[in-house]
Image (tube, rainbow over all chains, first blue to last red; front, top):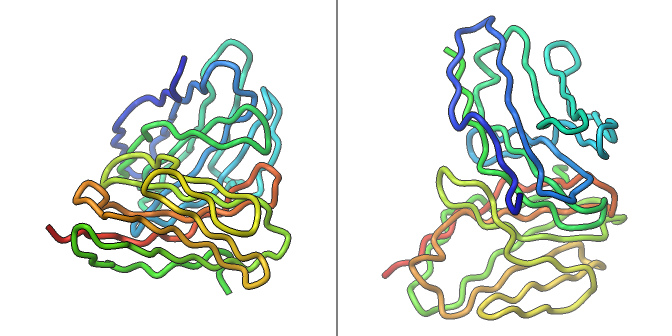
Length: 113
Length: 110
């Protein structure tokens, strides 16, 4: 598609439940990035993929967060056993190459109660 | 020292005036610099990018980069109420990771 698509728009989970977010990059873009935006607009890089391969996962909390980009499927970000502090907007972005501009999806707003 | 710093604002500018947004960064190896605009509750959208020292103009927007001083700025001429948003400065070393500042809230006063 012409835009990065993210689903769902909103997600509410009880503490300890699993959350799974999806991202379809722009067609032809090889790189996918996940960011977490908490209050006061602070963006945190989580992970990036080059096609289905993890490129950089230095921002991922190792214990509960995982992500995948499989061929012919939307990319996913999964949070096992969510915590209150996971409440944030999770943005996915894609780009044609490492150096190119990243284009953002609309985000998924996760609320953990 | 934070990697990308911006004044959080709010910055209030009268309609029609020039809004000046500033950003400093700590990594001297940074190569690519971006300004994103984010309306409340929306995803960020790219306004400008700049790679070389100097000015880059696009319509009412001018990005200025000074690598020696490690700052990048965004000027918005003839400010409009629709320019009211949070402006995020983002910096990349040229690899995949973009580091964002916390953003500056801009409020254009009608």
